[in-house]
Amino acid sequence: MASNETTNGSAFKVLEYSDEVHAERPEDLRIGEHGYKYRLVDGRVMPPYITPNRYALSRAVATRPSDICFVSYPKSGSTWLSYIIVLLATGSNPSGATLRDSLHWVESSWTYPRSAADLEKAAAPRIFKSHMPYSMALGGEPAKNPCRYIYIARNPKDVCSSYYYFESGKSWSGYYNGGWDHWLDMFTSSRVQRGDWFDHALSWWEHRDADNILYLKFEDLKLDTRGQLEKIAKFLGLSVSDEQLREVERKIGFDQMQQTEFSALKDVKEFNKFFRKGEIGSWKEYFTVAQSEAFDRLYKERVGDSGLEFRFE
Ligand code: PPS
Image 1 (tube, rainbow, N blue to C red):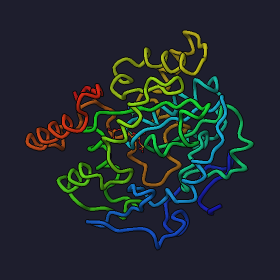
Image 2 (image 1 turned 180 degrees about the vertical axis):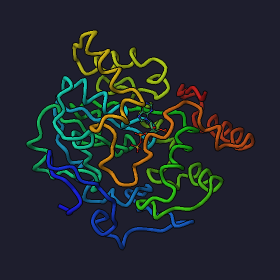
Image 3 (image 1 turned 45 degrees about the vertical axis):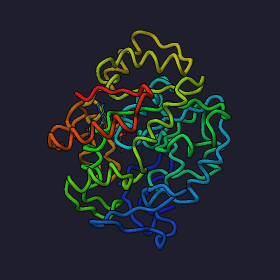
Image 4 (image 1 turned 45 degrees about the horizontal axis):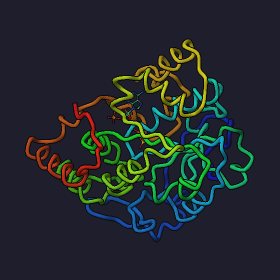
């Protein structure tokens, strides 16, 4: 274990990404335009800390009926969802010292890495984080797993804008310094870490009616928080009192989450502005009218008549 990481429940330290510690085989990393760093895993663009060994471990997890895996494309509200799941599923009594420490992000070698032995003995419910498309899911094919999967999707214009902010000038992206126009081109041509947004969101959408899959949207969580909390609790088979729901709703508020040390993600270096806006429609600060119209055409073409729709404002 690297010296800048904690073990479960130990003293608070800042987690800092570094190729040497987290990239496993740094010689496999690639550098794209404007310094953008990535690696290919199963032919898909991935961050350097999603290593072949970690990915293999995540695919091999023997899931249990009590397991919960939340999944998303990056910047879609997965941290928000994770806090909800941790609070609901543990009765507000999380296993870790911080939010990240209360989760198992198996595909990643970076924050709070877990070994197969750690996973074996982890307390139920084991709560897993993943940013993989359906075909690369934790545990192998979800249809063959007892685990419950909760996918959260967000309108891709906001994802793209939030992701631009998140990847610019960061260690794990090679201090990428392309401008917005360049980023938008990267995003729409599957060259950003985690690859193509469309096939990621659609891959889970196609399986949304499976008994062990719940498909959520950031916009619904924002506009109907209480209704979505009830939906999540029901899906997880939890009976939660009105008072508990009100308490969870208060704790997961945008401001509240940042003010609480447990959920503020202050243990991760370069995450100081992780809670950027938390809004629907902040893409308007980045997209020009022409870019927005071109994106709408692409959206129509790629999403087609699948029925996957979002509020964009
Ligand atoms: S990551 O790094 O890929 O795991 O990011 P992820 O957590 O999926 O998404 C980050 C965005 O979610 C916003 N967020 C919230 N919005 C509303 N309410 C709450 N409580 C909340 N928590 C996180 C976060 O601000 C990021 O969106 P942007 O648009 O950048 O603000």
